[in-house]
Length: 140
Image (cartoon, rainbow, N blue to C red; front, side):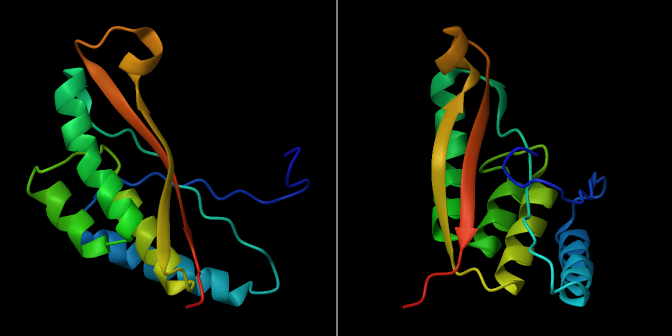
């Protein structure tokens, strides 16, 4: 609120997280955004990554997501989360956000920061991963 001033917030919680549900959510949100094109829009998605693995295992699992975020590869994100190559409890929401940002013109992704709970607490026996990333349009 300090940064944006007055704004509207539309919180969403996603239950069914299939690729089809993610795609439909992205499409519906894009329609709403297009109808309100005079307003600036910021898309924010929140999810934990891996849960309660050892520090080393969590970093391996989470690095798959980091790679997919940096390459802005929606298909790989879907494949890797569905196949168990990586995990995120909000993978469907993350995929929806990636799809929506792509529809809005983003063509690049960049991980800004990654850590897991072991980096903060020092207990590396069973950690939870966290990442911040952005999607943006870069003209080539």
